[in-house]
Length: 111
Image (tube, rainbow, N blue to C red; front, top):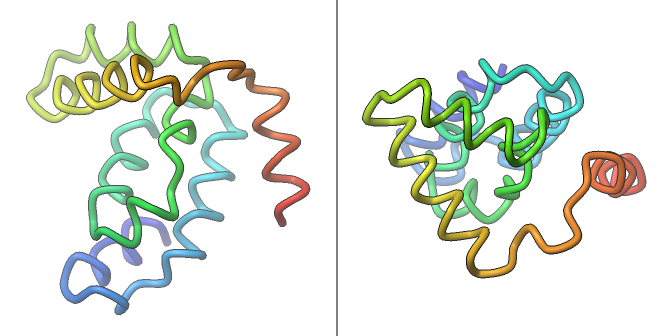
């Protein structure tokens, strides 16, 4: 469902449902599978609205350090771009006080 909505959004902004995309990303975040990181990244990059809706922290359902290690080990061009963005956001303070538990609770309250 996430890939379908991202493809629609990439085709024409507002064609995909960015709120549904965020919900899908929250579910993937809570499942904490590293294989989902690039799927979430793809959704986040599908449009400006999607990038605003899908929080960067949603890339890190398995943990920030684990996600950085995974992206480094994956070593694909897309993984390295994702890692660069993640590091930039980390330096900007987007992960201050980040914990899986608090993020999960935040999204549970949101939905």
